[in-house]
Image (cartoon, rainbow, N blue to C red; front, side, top):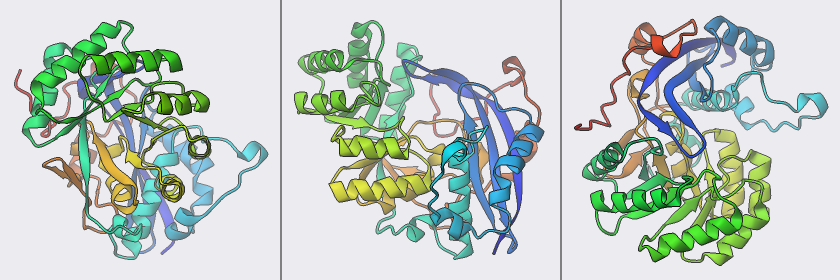
Length: 380
């Protein structure tokens, strides 16, 4: 059951809406599927994603992977690599030239779970099969009408928790969007805001107090200030006891540990690196700090969410990625369900490989129409 081959399939397509926040705007998707193949014929799947610039041609992705990553994989056991602890030193402490880190962890864990015939969440130790999902709009650049339509749709299909983007240069616009949200979601819904580090510590406190005076209760504020301002985050936690600080999204594993040790967050935000998430999740559990799963590609984070004891929420953002796999993660009535299929349960669609693969880099105006998103059927 050794790893004997890899495949990379490059995708590039238009998004069905502009996504972004106070710092980021994107209207296209740049993705490559990484498949690790064992000598038993099992395949582990992960996805390489870039947000700010397209991936290079597929041949270049393959060349970089073969040079920088493959020598450490060939002939190895997936389960051993998934659990391996490395201590990089000197020049070896560096990222790969392309963002393979998350894709590699997901693919290794998928392959390891398939080799033992278990769903990934079971291999990780889960005691449940579902977690609450909240609707996240990635909505900063949407018009007011499109913004309300998105969240009204989310409410209509069972969501009862909603996260919006704030941090606009004109704070009145943030208050306006909170008021618009209240018009289209049920009374008593949980509301979160995400500033994406748009504020300073004192500014964040003043704006949180203004939001509260305007009649908006917040379950949490996410990344209100700079990620490494541990003192500012700790101060904000104590100065705004009526809401919670959710932070850690932008930090690596070491940074997340430092954040926890500094008592700088009420909730630790993690994403899709399976090994890293489980390691920091165990530390968070030991310290009694809740964990939330932010956006993970095709919601693969549901496996870590149901396996860790401190996770209440998984983020879902209605991105048009479902066409890439045969059977997406089930999300129903405000809950995400961990598949009971071996591995993480996501298999690359051969239809997508045939119809949507783009081996060569395309210009944005060459992408054509966006793939359909059946989970976001909005009436214009």
